[in-house]
Length: 490
Image (cartoon, rainbow, N blue to C red; front, side):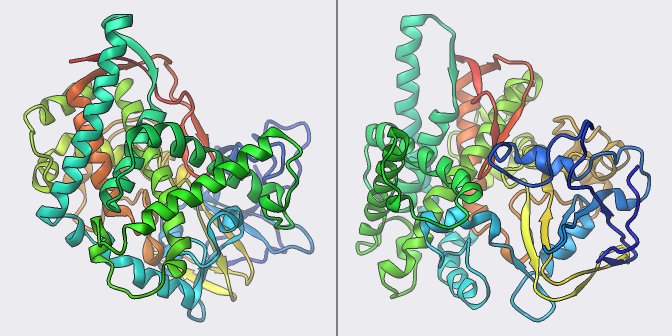
């Protein structure tokens, strides 16, 4: 068991435990900070903060910090009430937390620093106001607008279905295929052609834009950790083919952004809901963040749903029996599909796309949880709200609270939650973040994934090739096997 540090910079009822920088000869999963040899394993980095916590019984086992002389503390929490308190107390006022931009410096270099994701304070408020209208539930679920999404979706799936049918004619009734790239192509076409009203062909989506965005997103992750001096990729000589490929991918990303912005003047898609006369240059960073971020998040979400159902045939058939008679994926029909809704909620809980939420204390700040506990967090502290491990701990989501073990995929727990808790008192999974900086694309993401998964289950039977459902993580989390399944038409 780790010992409490008498010189802790934290105070209050919640007394986080200090972890050592190095633990030579131990079984700790990783060093507790990213470096060039472990940055592709961020889940393990977070896990290292809770090393040796299994035998602790008090609530402090969910709150840990790292302190190195000369540097501000790093505080990591998997306590849902602490996560909720800090997330809600986020803003630009005195005594509030700001979003910590340190983990997203690579994103800022790729998209611009004046985006909704990266900016803080007054700049963030302006960006949020600009972006809010097209994302509202009332906007997305207008009958005419929703019909556009549904129709574009049908066309996209029809093309992919035809491709699968052709492959099955050659290889037999069952094919093995990694679905993640297929999902990503569908999601990107929905974003560009339906949300923004472009007319990009499926071939260009598949052959040009998806590979380029994958390369850009992969570079963003490494650039955040390795590029500490902030050099633009275009200022780096093309010593290797990899650098040349990254540069070419960034240029294709700019090209895709131009195509999206070009439809604004005609008010295609949801541009008609964008009530602002600001220039395209003023919103370019946000468009780039939205293209890459929404694609990454919705692909992660849908990939995890299909990956879980591929390992749970009973749940897959329950969802199929619920959606097989749905011809129109209207908001009302989706709302009534309770089995599908439970699967979506359980996916966000067990395997959230956003696996941590970064915050920073701008002054010495006191938080208070709903059960009355208090903690003073010192100025300058880097805060990681560890959603991934909070959602998997038995104390937070286990048998006592939800009727099922926390570390398994069990959609029925949401039926238990509905009967056990009053509305507004249910456990929080933070799947789209929480508080003022909740993901603005939440409604769009929920709608897209429900559409994709509902139609996919209706069309196919699928079974995982690999038994284990392991994760990989970068900007978001994904199934490590790329959603590798055996697939057959129903």
